[in-house]
Length: 357
Image (cartoon, rainbow, N blue to C red; front, side, top):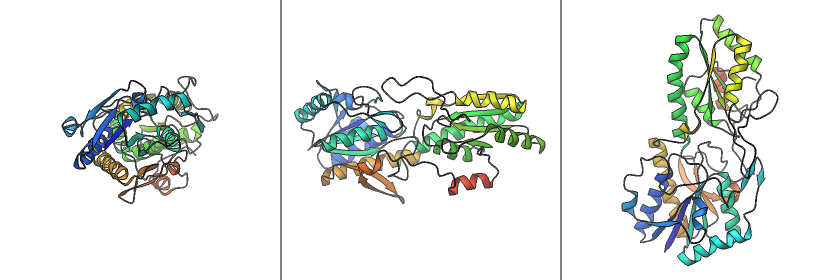
């Protein structure tokens, strides 16, 4: 039995833990694992891959990134904007399938987010033996309660806020921290609460910067002369527009810059010295937390179990502390967003955090 594994989409802490789990579990069954480099692109002739043995995964559990590489561009990009999906051309699928057949791959484990799993679903519907493993630091896939990488990203946000607290207090400043979160604000919400932010701005909750300014002024009146603001990159400005860094050129647009704009406007409204800081890819890099190492490894082991059962077209899922699986079609194009009236948002408001609404 020979199975394949690839990482597709953005990098994420815990990807190597999944590889470690797949290779270890497959070795116990006497199976061979082929690791394709740079996502689905590694399937194109002549094929870019390597045979992975347990000795090749020694020590990778603690490493960030992925030893196989990944990409969110190329011939297999399925997501081209919010709600927009592109079919992978038939000639590209046929070329990749020839590599699968030549290598006698009996199952292909696709580790990716919504876009990569959308590609995986198309290939499954065309007869490929696909098994999905959810990967996104945004934690926004509806078919799983948690994805690996999310805890690591939140931990990075908390560390940044801990550091910003001291400089903000020293200068009596407003500090605006921009974090990742295109459609969902889970990183901003969890990181903001855990890091002691005073204001959290999310894509799911329309905000008014005048409300935020009033909150800052109220804090000043109470003797709290510094304020920390966390804003997700996908949070819309009051005019309803997203702040983008580049136009759509075959993939989803690059977001970024909302932190700078929020900071500039708050300085106008409050007359307080306001600075912005963007975490960017720091949230994707570095060693995964213990939780993400364990979760990634468990996901890899379950993927091999699904291959053993011939349960193709399914995605590994984590629910109620248990790892199981769901159909891939239940997982894609159904993002799990922050509920504006949900318990976590209400808890944030209960302790005095302003969400700008």
